[in-house]
Image 1 (spheres, rainbow, N blue to C red):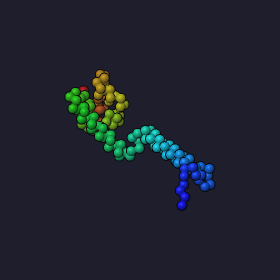
Image 2: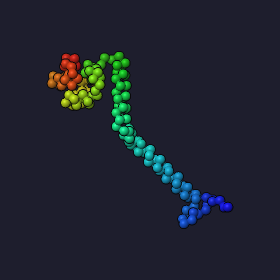
Image 3: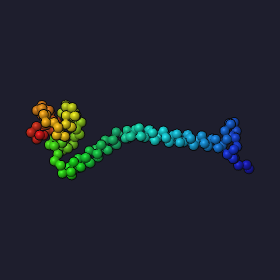
Image 4: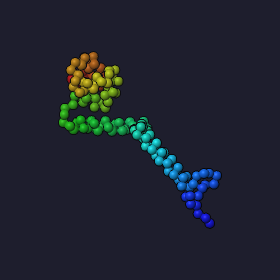
Length: 133
């Protein structure tokens, strides 16, 4: 019984067994690199919508806990939004205003917020405009 050596040419080919092993190794390496590149490109997007929703909810809860534990007083609008369980984007959509408006007001830069905007936010949060300032 003869054993195959690396120098032996594969029947019907011009490749030796060593050449074939090198080609297979190269293909496996390229496949691993392609998977790694796809993973980096699709960070988080390869998850199901339900998983993304659960992760977003956990992140929201963590941020809310951090904000409450920091000891800094929260802007009344932010506190009301947290209590309603809404994101800035969701509140803006519900109040029919631009999301950056909510962000500006909560950050304290919205000195000249219109009464109409406050009324829309209050209605979306089921509260009065006075409680949001």
